[in-house]
Image (cartoon, rainbow, N blue to C red; front, side, top):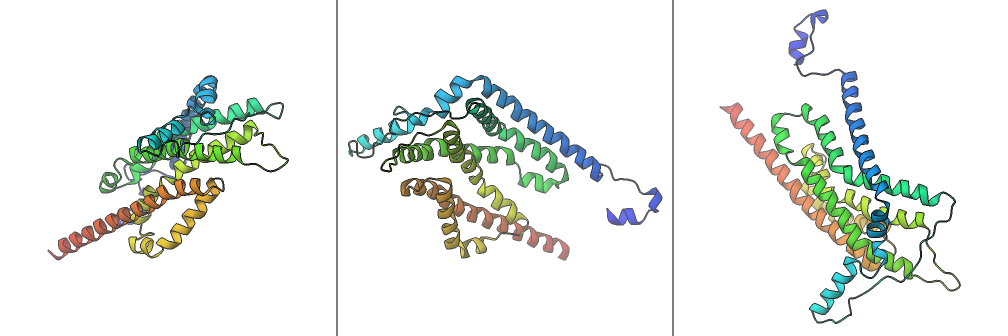
Length: 289
């Protein structure tokens, strides 16, 4: 393309078909960002008007003994002959609103985060629509299924945080005692913890996708990831400690999927490197012929 442009006089240079100027790119990006914001707002408004379901059946569900995770683990314990040894349930506690407008502002915050989580696949679709025109056909084929896989991983992370991390974390935090003090969590703190247990975990589950693209541009190799595997495990343990309460069981439950994702990322990086070497070999053979 540069050779074609240099061969023409400066005043007669024409923009190649499909080529966009910097400001046209900004305008295109603005449109995608605007549509992403619309998606978030639509789902946030829907969540706002479904207040009873969002709080009673969704957000506060891990507070009660009949929550799916408690019942499933207890049934599993009895099924394998351990009786009630694996059963655990959260202590009863009340959630209170302290500030004059805390209930309303927290309701808005919850609606926004639900809108963000539900709109995540649509946001990815807008990102893909913005990026894909600049890719070669081979690159588009290689990234086929990007939106679906990223959305699936994010959803798995959200569900893992909601059904696995939050029950253990809530039980630990609500049952933690200090002599002379009674824990009465505020609505804002409860919501903040529930958000921390879900959305960040959903983003962490995108690790294989991140490694795939970093491997494509040569910033990450499987040899590098294998060499620093032990260092990565330490980082994973620290990350698990940050996003969970200081409970060994909960940190283990968070750390194990991250270990699996890291090993999966090594496999993905190795496949990317193998395909890249194969493509280089085919190209060199073509040039030789």
